[in-house]
Image (cartoon, rainbow, N blue to C red):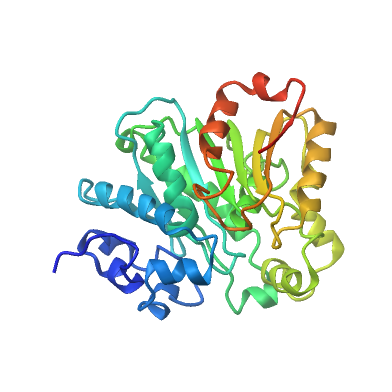
Length: 336
């Protein structure tokens, strides 16, 4: 039976579509469980009912783009190492000299690529930008003993080296890229901009700019219940304050930090608003160009955000990348 992507398709049916065979275990990536398999009978409509910020139309938009590429490309999922993969989404008509590497969130327990990275990659493709979605290492039982970090940052470095080694195949200039992160993936992208743990630490070029969507910035501000789990998963059970500071991006912004576009909703109950204030202060002190787009509602995890006032944030972020002066002179924030 021919399956057609729509709101009533189940997660199991999506996984079993012939064109998506390379995506087994990659839509919602985790080293702890197979989330898509566990929720295989859930339709996209029901998924949105359970998690209102996971908009069906945005997910379908991303899946539709991936389906087009899957039917055209012989290979579109590339293993980087044992627990890390790249999903390649080339633009039909390239209009920019940089590509994007996208890192979805999931509290470092999962990477919600289907919900966050794929829809935004589809939009970036539409704008003429090649994309790679990165499924990085997530926490395991062992992580809660010894800590997951710095493995996800090493994954970013290995992924970029992989792209560099295959830049002719992909048709990109490996050193020209932007990094886009969501929630925990936003934390990873923000850390990638730092000297002590990011691109420069690995002897690699900085991204041209960062797109951070409702990012986790600091390990110091997370609420107690969720914060304990994330901190132990990232840093191990014997973590100290100095370890949290080590992996809080706002403490490590310098004058060479990439310029930043941040988008968030004021009713986000997951990432503390203090995170953005701390990052704003750090960027201002380091004189790094940035722009913050705050919208009155939208919650956490909306990704492309086409159903909330953040609709169009991706286009505005790319415009910022081209013309940062238009955004940084005078008003640094935009309330919609």
